Image (cartoon, rainbow, N blue to C red; front, side, top):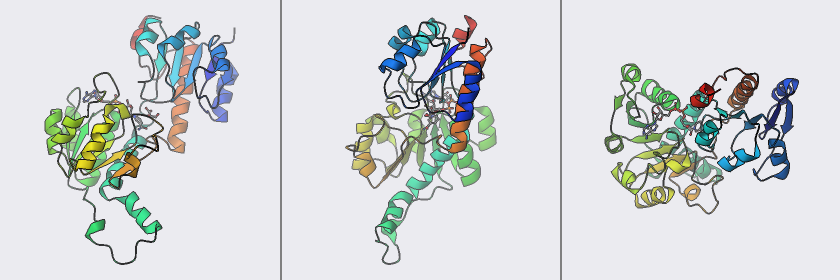
Length: 326
Ligand SMILES: NC(=O)c1ccc[n+]([C@@H]2O[C@H](COP(=O)([O-])OP(=O)(O)OC[C@H]3O[C@@H](n4cnc5c(N)ncnc54)[C@H](O)[C@@H]3O)[C@@H](O)[C@H]2O)c1
Ligand SMILES: O=C(O)[C@H](O)CO
């Protein structure tokens, strides 16, 4: 029997062809909702599911009685019902490593663009406002030599810290679930409790996953602990931040500026004050969005699902417990 895969995100033709050589593929290039009737019908026969950027509720698993694995084209997996998948023996595979450096580049882009006001001042030139030499009203803040506070020192956190310490001579502080002695020796990084890190850092950069523990980790209390000159950068997930508290902190001058790739609601509503604030750089969740990296992520997801459906261990597995039950 040929196994069946439902693909619910855009894949390149060679990747689709690769899947089609071994499996029957129901391909939904643009799927807006898991309520779509044709999608649900295909899911009823599917052994594998591959895609990204869609919330998969636990109840959807009832519509997929033959499902063996989901391969998400992302490292983050907060929009999947991991516990319920494990209970049912369904594997969840993700795409770590292949996107680490690109996402770290985007994190550092936010640090630089926000500190040096690059977007705001590029708009100033575009509007024709550059009429004379620039002066203090256009000055930014230095990045080199400052203190970088990493909240989350995993793959992406470490890659941003490395850029800061080795490329920009920054002092690196970090808060992480476990100590990182190798990074302490290599980068001179120092571990801090979150409150101390917030009080000491010039840049606070968030790279934790979204979990019940990290949801709204940043609220009014945390922003009040930061320096008035601090720049806050979020490259992880929007829900790690209580957005009204961030907006209030920026408005009151409790912190100086913010660089944001992710938001509580995506796409960000045009009604949100954030993209209209001069001291905010807002990007549309492009952490990993380069041609090279998105291709590598999709290929990793394709490789993961092919392996699982052939009875082999995937390259990147989130729920080990589901594998050990096989
Ligand atoms: N903006 C984007 O496009 C984009 C791209 C890739 C990843 N991400 C996000 O970045 C996250 C991190 O990716 P990664 O590959 O670095 O993951 P990772 O698992 O390697 O690193 C996460 C780190 O956070 C730490 N952590 C967890 N809870 C914490 C807490 N409460 N306080 C301090 N540290 C805590 C963990 O110990 C771990 O070291 C992903 O889960 C995803 O949500 C966003
Ligand atoms: O988690 C991830 O991989 C990124 O957010 C891209 O979707």
